[in-house]
Image 1 (cartoon, one colour):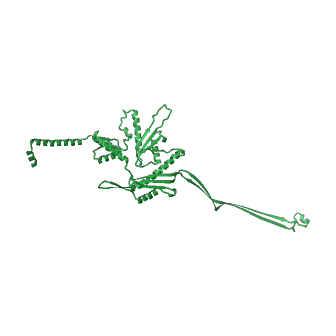
Image 2 (cartoon, helix red, strand yellow; image 1 turned 90 degrees about the vertical axis):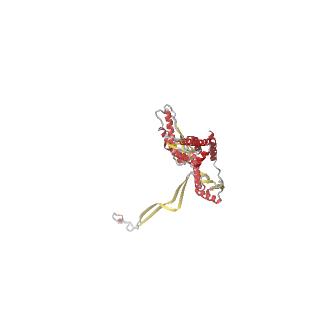
Image 3 (tube, rainbow, N blue to C red; image 1 turned 30 degrees about the vertical axis):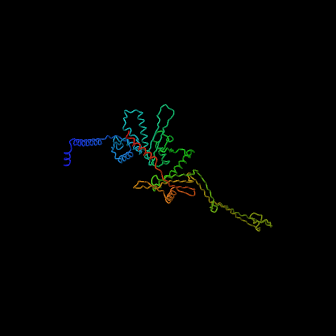
Length: 436
């Protein structure tokens, strides 16, 4: 303190005044800056968010140390006004929010029914129905998000032609997940029962890759439907084996370091074979028929002596004659035997695998030097590839008698091109934003 007093005495008055003025100016600017920063104007970054998207955005803001405010039970997030544009672009690059602002029946809670026309009410009803269906479909375990578009024709009193509603559904899957045939039908029936007059044939379901997800038909004996079901069965079987191989090897190789492709030849012929086998050595008595015949006969020999006494009533005629008797017995037995017979009906159901071809591409090992930060690639050994081959054979049911084939190749995976594009686009935004 004494040093400062002595320095002020030795300093010229003009310099002392300039120094004090500079100090006061810096202090004044600091006070202004803190007052301005403490009273920043917060504006909405996103609104009508679900809790999942809101949680992602809050985590992203906290990682960047950006102040924010929450309103409407977490469905609305506010940030400083000067950071809104930059944050929205940054969030868009990260795919946030993922589901957008899905509006359900709560749209009628904030609307004034007295000052709203019938047209607006009908549009809001359609939006609410689409939003509620999208939320319900998005609750499936394999589905990340869904969008539903409904076309409900207006009812006309004096029209002979009946117009039926139609629906279009787009599904965003979680990772490499796929929907089974039963799940696709469940989505179709869910929408069909929620919209009056909507038929399954008027519903179109696609995923974000552009693949059409076909609904089951009522007529399963239709040739076109049989062919479609056969193709769907083959694709579903191949996808199931692909996912089985990738899920198994990713436990050791890491997520995204293995790619499998299975090609299956499947026999869809339905064969019915009847077998009828006779066993002569094994007999069973079925019936026995026995006929018995018994009979007797007597003969009297003629006498040469003729007398009156012999011809009178009461006389013993022919007493001195010879008399003989004869009897016979006959038995006829018929036995019927039943030969042992076996009848078998063998039905070969459709979907018998004739041959499997499995191709698996695995990545190597990456090591990062802690000092230089350089990443080196090391390929997998032959011993590791043989272990992977044994695991795959057990997982897919490999059968050499069917001439199944399996091929495992170790190659270095390239970087994700989409990530490189996002980084370059983000760098462009960072460079050009200050000039806006």
